[in-house]
Image 1: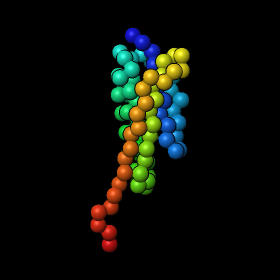
Image 2: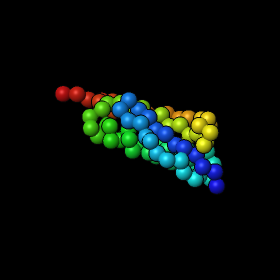
Image 3: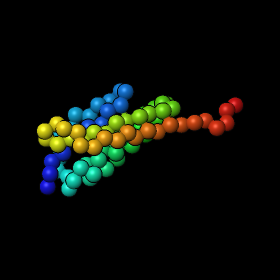
Image 4: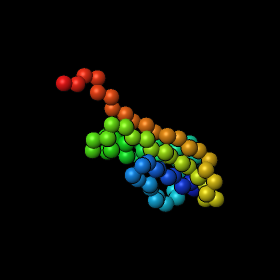
Length: 80
């Protein structure tokens, strides 16, 4: 099973996780996206109206093989 490094980064956070075994890069990206959703949820819970988290998957050679962005925004539809 190959080893990939999954890194998540936003304006206030950067993960420093250790490389882990995944079936393929897509499985590593899926795990990274789940973590990014949790980060974005926490930021919105703390009052942010928008949040973007970048997810990068790289091999042990530090070459990025997949990248994605997870975004979350809150748009008030009715104000008092």
